[in-house]
Image (tube, rainbow, N blue to C red; front, side):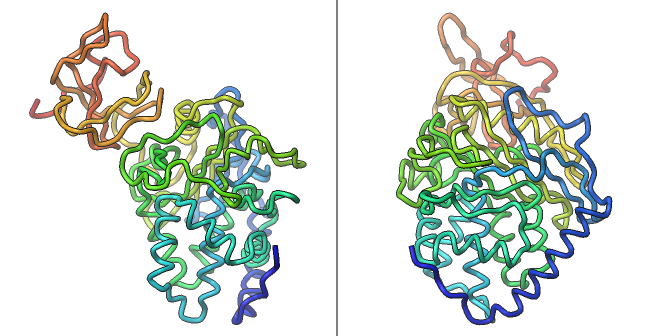
Length: 394
């Protein structure tokens, strides 16, 4: 694969990179960071790299193995988008054809768009340019022999914080507004049919902006029913190709365990940057990984973040439908990842649902989905959930 030349207008980018590197080094060496606290709860079997940076105070409130390298999965799409946009200097205008790719890539984690730009803009050269531009220290292009797999880019939690700090504090305003504006419009259903509102998006009320990542052969096809236009697609450049679990070993980079990452900002004015990178035991289901990264993220000290009201419950069964009202009369809004933990806001009686030998006419309202699931699929011994209020007007 050929290397592309540095594009015009990059002299200022090199200078900004030096400033960004110096600023990052200052933050990381002057006592501004704090060690992980006992409050950080990493579920059994999960490997995690965590960094939480409060921009208001200029300090880390959490760090856990923040320099550890993980395969980025779709988080590298931040670098792909940033590289493209910086190449549009000095106007940073985005033609309609590119907007039609970049917006789904940032909002819905579209793989086809990432494949396009990875191929068109030099593959690993994108990562090398952004290492220099942003001042990244733990980031590497995909390993030798795997250069086509953008999802094999190595990335750490602290480098992820650096990327967001660059976007928010250094990048030209049109670049910042384009990227962050799209991350604020993250869709629950990714373009490949996965429910991507785990981690940050489930742990905190808006405002937030997120870019998530996931990869693993034990994750079945996504069941989110809106926007699932490219389910099952893969190519030589796909970060989620089934070949990922058969890749050769790479030093310091695990390409085998399922990965689930949640990154972004939380709070008014993008106050706090959160990066949670996780690996899970081989064979872990998507719903289990989704639940585990949610529990970990909810345990973090995130200034400016507000936990949503409600009670978390486990669920069981595959393809549990979320309905607009407590009945099966209307088409489902979406389907839950199998066995995922959900936030219940209230409950009400509705149509009786039967899963022999059980019957249940209570339904749980899930505020983060804007719909109901039958209580028969909630992991609780009683038909009516304990300590959950009845929905008003029921």
